[in-house]
Image 1 (cartoon, rainbow over the protein chains, first blue to last red):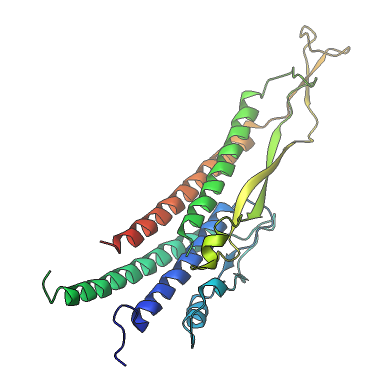
Image 2 (image 1 turned 180 degrees about the vertical axis):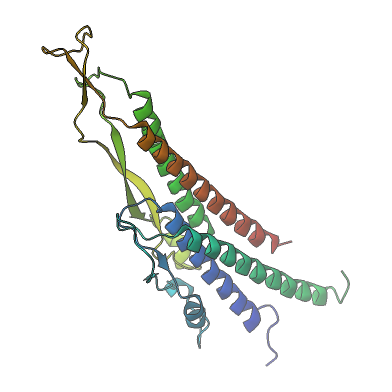
Length: 123
Length: 147
């Protein structure tokens, strides 16, 4: 059976990559929003692990995909019990944003390839 | 993928920090207020922040595609409480708010404390505003896939 170009494993993997990146950015914004909340603990997901889980064998179930959120260990707590580190979150926000951008660019290139094939190589 | 959830969370952070700044400037404005509707001098107000699970509005949409937002929490001002510090007493027998011994109760407000709190609120507001910028650029990039 010829492999489908529109629904190739590469495209599926990319969409999962974007999903995990977006989930992670959401957690980072949540950490930043709670930077002054007493007792709030920094949360994060293990990017590699979640991406592997999302890209695991068989069908990917969107509805069931809820990344495992973990409390980040090893961060210094303030006296009010909050341990959000501005530096950590700022760097991660920039990093995750760039990762997302990479995913989008590759996805776009992939789609352009398909469009180019549809148009028989013409632009 | 819940890109708009980020905007909501950062927005909640901005709202909470703005409320905090509002309470702080109210404290500074009333640093000399000896008369309030409740009686007595103005009492220093403090905000209490609380993390809050994101309301799962787009659940129906997510059931058919897209990841659930996992464990992300927004923030809100749970309550505004009055500081329990006792008022400062100053001897001003001519003041209409003076007690029988001639002392007037003034709010116990330290301008330095309030200014640092205000700066903290402004910085945290900026922080959330840059997180909004990040979320916006991610949404814009996703839209660019369609081009």
